[in-house]
Image 1: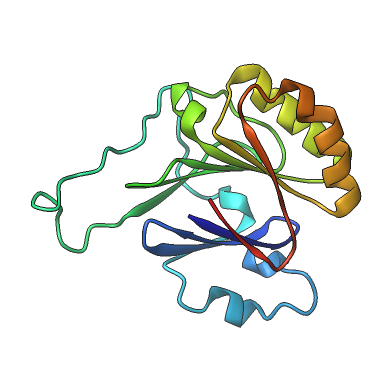
Image 2: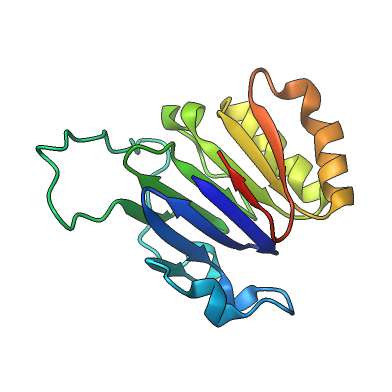
Length: 177
């Protein structure tokens, strides 16, 4: 899985052999929206608010299928709304990816192996991170914010990580997990 964050909640994700672009219309000035969505398999506006909702407490990621059993043409990335300002992406062979900008949904056991990307300013990143870490211990938490926001989030979260990796996303640079 590879994420490229552009600012706000605009992100281009390579996951499960597909490309998912989130909030292309909200891309910062200087980012060509047409180029951003070029080659995308899924274009998701407004952090997935219009997607089908998913119950994040009982949801389970799909298990990898044997190559002999795989159906040709089967979609390998599924996207759902996980509540206000939250989106869940599942791709076979990849950890679940949860994108959160407003409120952390209730998390099930699947979140222990998940990658969770948080978007916002310093106070928002700290609050979202604390909400995630009080519920589960995901594999990775990614912070998408300016340098001051990331610094504040690291200071506010570092003592609660308990084995969770904490990574910072930098605008325009891809990060592979």
